[in-house]
Image (cartoon, rainbow, N blue to C red; front, side, top):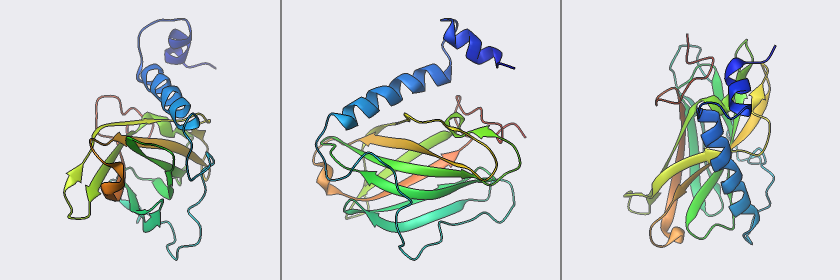
Length: 189
């Protein structure tokens, strides 16, 4: 059975969150692919850095944690305030002159299939002194984001940086149900 919202979107009906974010994701992926960089376009699990990727304690809204670890010259960490989504991996995508892109792997530790693209992702960037940097958080993906229990998907979370992108020392990704477009199945309960 096909979701009516998806059917309207394919026929050119109302503008949905998925259509807007999918367009942004394709644009971001195109920009990333067009840049020379120090990292390939394939997300990884972040390697063995001694952290277990975090876990949730089972209470709704309890953050899950991944990090901190170093990737692409900056410290990266992530949390999910959506029970049972878990931030499993974080990797800085190289080759971007005016933005920081963090490939964020989200695992569905729940009991129902969900689309990890239907949640809100925020990226906070900080310089070495702890001052927040950047504007215009965005996210997108070129892969399938509907995940069954136990499966994972990657989302590219990015933020533009005014000035020197090499001044970014730390990045924090947060997955939540906040925001007008957050409509994931775990947000509805």
